[in-house]
Image (cartoon, rainbow, N blue to C red; front, side, top):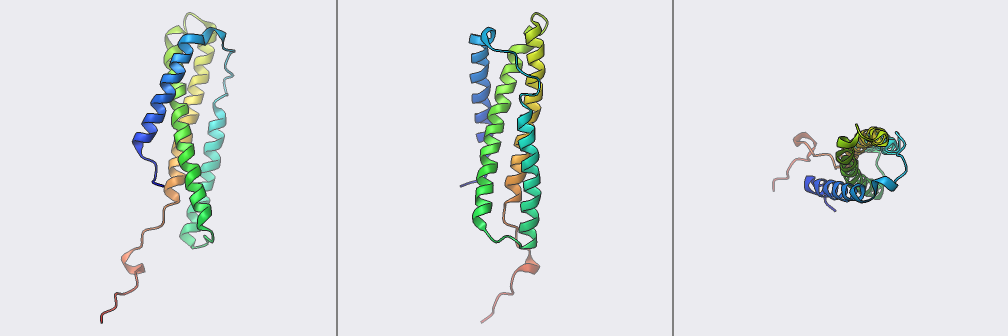
Length: 153
């Protein structure tokens, strides 16, 4: 498994944006109103991953890491979260792009636009926390003074 590449995040975001924008174009009138904090669950996930990042980082630096499989699972979680966060950021941006010109005409669009903003901010926080978690799972680089002396023979 490789670490998350920016192009993967961009592609996921563009897919989310396109799908939601087209969905709003076709069926916005039949949607129920979006609760303002519907996207805030992504922010809660971001906070959890942020705490986990600092925990993993401390265990790796202190040498208290006993199970490398748990780090591999954490990297998989971080990668999945960053991709999901990117798709959701695209989706929230797609909804905001659709709703922005309609805010003055429709009260529902104005309310849903606020939900889109909360969701987009929460998705961006999830992406940042997931990328930080992924970074914290990297093996520390060995410095010259940490390397054993080369044997001459």
